[in-house]
Length: 298
Image (spheres, rainbow, N blue to C red):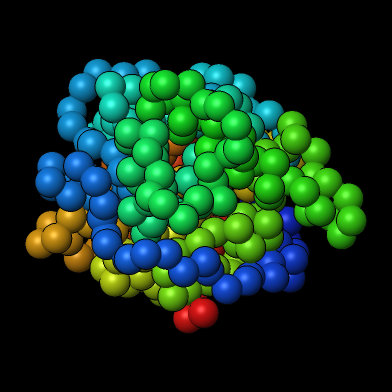
């Protein structure tokens, strides 16, 4: 294994030990995908509609999960707009530089919770069901306001008691172990699995991600760089979501990645995520998949 890969593995492996998944919250149904995305033929990214439109670089606003804030317009990031994901008329983007994990968790939950999807789109909630992502109190009238409020609610929940009794520093985004605890989808829970894209088992792990997607299960992926960019790059730095393909649209050996900084979905051959040496727009301008939050039966 190359030196840079070895160090990346050593920094990522402890994340698995900190993952203590809990039973996913049961919801009214497990429709996948939900909302207009199903009608548009877009991959299952919760309630959002996906269609082509111009947009910013995928690297803009990428989150730091562990290693400090990521600069907007990360050096080396490629410009590629993917397939835009819309909530109402707004791009479904992370609300700030520390909420990509929160945006991913909201979209994951909305894919399996029609009530959350309905609230994000319209502001209405069914009687007797309030998803945990919906904050108490007044929220702005636009879908973008609701998505932002849900991200902040999830950010608070995943930061609380992240280090035993202590909170996680807000500037460092969403740690993988609390993301695994908070991730909810009917019938499953999530567990952190470290990934070294140059290791012999990397194709099998990405195959598990693809298999989960084919069963309608979204999978969060933590991504980052390696020691060639410095120690701060060799830890998970951003979060994307591998989403289920639209019915009948699955391509073997392909992942559909929702990238929350761009608010886009990218179709990426899994082979392109192995032994990478250059950034990829689907990874928010980063180079490596470093951990997967894999679903297991609840």
